[in-house]
Amino acid sequence: MVLSARDVAVLDANAEALGVPVETLMENAGRAVADRVQASTAPGDVTLLVGPGNNGGDGLVAARLLADRGFRVRVVTPVTSWRAPLVAGQASQLPASVEVVRVRDEASVRGALTTRGPVVDALFGVGFHGPMRPPYDAIVAQVNASRARVVSVDVPSGLGTPQAINAAETVTFHDVKEGMTLENSGRITVADIGIPARAATHTGPGEALLYPATPSSQHKGQGGVVLVLGGGPYTGAPAVAGLAALRAGADLAILLVPRRAWPVVASYSPNLVVRPLQGDDLDFDDPSNRVALNLWLKKADALLVGPGAGLQDVAKRAMVNAVGLATEERVPVVADADAITTLAETPKVLSQNVLLTPHSREFLTLTGARLPDDETARAETARLAAARLGTNLLVKGPVDVITDGARVRRNATGHPAMTVGGTGDVLSGVCAALVAKGLGPFDAARLGAWLVGKAGEVAAARNGPGLLATDVVDALPGVLVAHGCGRVADARDGTQADAARARARMFK
Image (cartoon, rainbow, N blue to C red; front, side, top):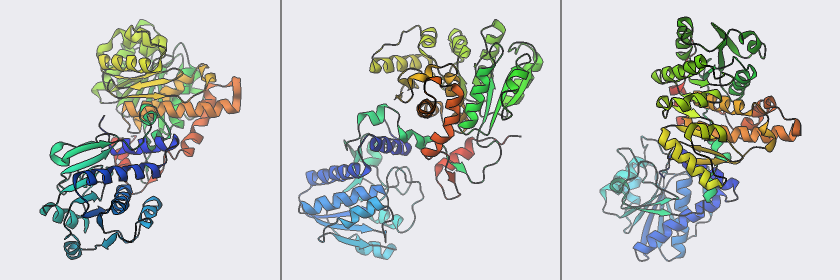
């Protein structure tokens, strides 16, 4: 599996939740680098280029260990003081034999990078986004112009930019990182630094890092507009799903329901925007309803289809048409309940734009396959089904399985009392909100499953066997706050805010 910067952050957080602190991962990473340097050269001069972040911390560990093994170690860094406590702690452990040279401009860089021997590049890791600023650019330029053999830590600094360092070898951790090739990273050594297998196979608190930051300049509707298509025979389902979407951070939940259901659904909460369609069933054979769907889809960031919709022929045609139209409009789709049964009959409309949230019986209807009891076999059965259908699946159960046909995550949060009716509508509403906020269907499903499970645990502790689906909805904000979701990003913040702006549509 190829890991992105975000994947790495999630893994680190999940590993820490499983009892492996980041300090241990850093120590193991630095040791892996020191081992590779020692294996390829006899003790002598070695220069370590050290940046301000955790990648630099890995380099400082390597510097300490190489000094202990008889190398003459020089640390070259533009950092005047270490702000990150973890990295500062590593700097304080450097033995007196390590020469620390602080550079501030091109001239000082020229004077510092004269030592013979290999160079260890620990300037920037996977979180770096260019362009490289002075004096880092001067360091990279001088190293690239030299004949020194460079060993990069995790990724070559500046990977993917014109200013990237030329590495002869890269010691990367846990798995290969996004964008790495033999051409830009040299020989790639993958080191096991002690991340538990469960940190990668199962969801955990690290998934909360997927939740998009809120831009400080956000306007109405930019937090996500969810369009819910359902209701008819059942009125509570679309309302619960819409409320869950709002509690998960969507700005607006707009419910399109048949006219006969409209007054009932509209009475549940003033927070929902409930609009009536013509007729007593979902019916897009009706031209006026088709016009309404087109109108609202143009305002939506995600479509949730199925809650309470029923399985009348006209409703089934309506759901298929809605999914097809959403795909044409590039609006991602979450399909639940009656929509899953319907789409099982018309799988040609499925795509990676769609997330299905079946329980075991719906999975059997959808795929013709029974889910095994064994957790690993269950995950593989779901993955194969998603690959065959070309879509995303969130298979609900005591341990949920989330897959896009290639990637797989399992989610073990939740409580047995969540078998109460309506919790599936909560899950689909939360997933729709996360998609509307800019996450892809796979990431929305893994985060949504984890959040709803945690909210269910909180609600069950409060309400016991009398748990209601709306109790889970009410517990969601506390879970989001407890795990740092929805932090406000200012103009200096990173890519999360940019991604949120790029995906958001102003509600007009």
